[in-house]
Length: 91
Ligand SMILES: [Zn+2]
Image (cartoon, rainbow, N blue to C red; front, side, top):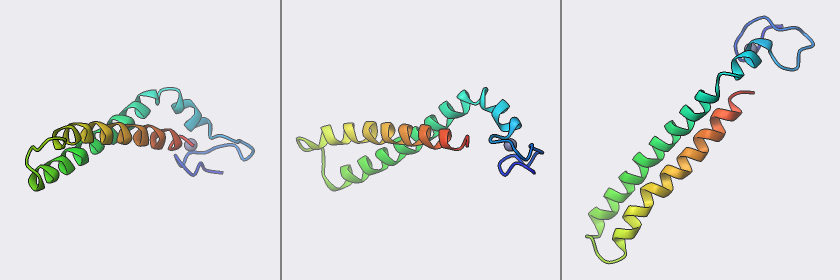
C-alpha cells in the first residue's frame, strides 16, 4: 500500500504512514509557517478593507478605530485559520 499523502510505501496494517509520522515531528515549523501565511493573508485583506472604508468615509470619528481594529482582527482570524489548516494537513 502506498501512502495517499506522500506516495511512499507504507505497511498495509499501518494506521499512520511511518514516513509522514517521522516528518510530523519536525513540522512544528510548518504549522507556524501556515499560521503566519494565514495571518499575512488576513492582514492583507484587513488592510484592503480598511483602505476601501477610508475611501468611503474620511477619517471621521469612530472610523479610525474600526480601520485600526480591522487589520488586527483579520490578522488574528487568518492566523488561527492558518494554524488549524496546517495542523489538519498533517493527517
Ligand atoms: Zn506518507
